[in-house]
Image 1 (spheres, one colour):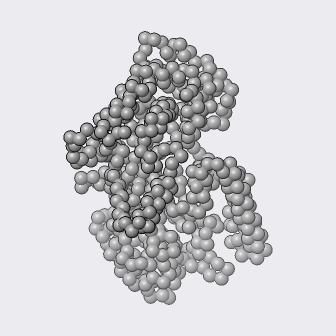
Image 2 (cartoon, one colour; image 1 turned 60 degrees about the vertical axis):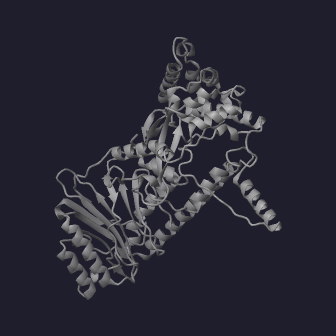
Image 3 (cartoon, rainbow, N blue to C red; image 1 turned 180 degrees about the vertical axis):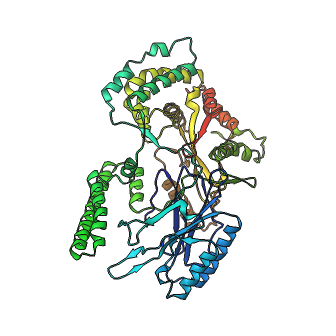
Length: 576
């Protein structure tokens, strides 16, 4: 089953031990919602997902539950457990909305005693069903098995059934008047619709670099002036524009063309005018048109992926990403946390959560390093090009500043001379410009509880200009280390021409040799927690001096400037 993920929607999901797919809720990101995993049924044939929504001032907190009850589930047991859940929620004076596919036909209220008992239970708890017409129609049957119950006053809401053909069940809905707290989550992207390459490059070439690189300015000021000038030009040619809903559909399914969208809209109209008309000819005409659109979408999707695989046939990373979308790789759920528990206190405000993550990521390394015992052993006893080319390594999809990487790569030619001056001054003075040290950090969920800070890892996107400087430094350092044969022969990670496969082959060969020689073998595998964050910078610099920093063109002060006094902007949703 494919999971639909939308940019402006939070996806709450409860896994299932069955093949039904579980239960899910889609909540707009501008609504303050938190998952409620503590509300659940204690039976296998019921799937449910619950969330809590913060209401406006002096309003009741809202609880929404989505339920799927399997047709073979014991109705009496289900009624008893749902009754206990509702009573608990009523004690806390929640405004309740329960919806889903319950597989209980309310049209049999007068002829089926368990259904009558179930409805009486709802009435006893002050919950009223607001869907009263059939929700599943076939050529011979009509049933009301998709429900919505609420204890909210009915005059303040509108409910009904949508006559659309997205499923064999008709979608049910209710629109309520409620003062729910909302936040601004409008999405904006760079607008390239009127972008002209020639005009953009003309403005880049017209920059007064002599004014920017005046000798009386320090390196930090020069760099900031350059970034400001480039930002003004970029904003002129590719301004920010709000992303429309139609654009989001195109981004999620790029093979759905405008023509296919028009056909889908026509099919939906035909569902009401033809399929529900009970006219055999019109029903057949609708089915024929629906089948034609299905074939058309499949062909368009096939052509799209064939083109993409051909385009990225030499890009293994992008190829696997395409394969992942095809096999509908399971998503981990919501893209950012809506609730964090820290020191036995619950945090739900985005500003508080961002601050918690920022403090955690900044301090986790030094905190763990304190537990590492100091050693009196001297660590040194264990030691035995043009920047325009570096722009080729930049990913066009990542940027932490307002200047897109794709435009930097486009202007790499005219920018190479001024950037060469900046980079040379940075390397010669051992100073990294402050603006190069700014990174955008996003917490990515790994596994375990979504409310635990320790179950997230930080993904940092640094400035593209900083990345180019780091690449230049890396190229010079790695050339020096390789030329002097300093690196250990069995260092397989982070080296060109080496891989984890070589490490596995070397391990297997060692084991085979030991077995042939009748030796006892033992393997010890270590996994260091937060290894990069706990690196001792003093030891690192001491080893660089031991290796021969005088012969290496990279000053130790530059490395210190790179790894210390960095600034990070932690991103939670649209909050930075």
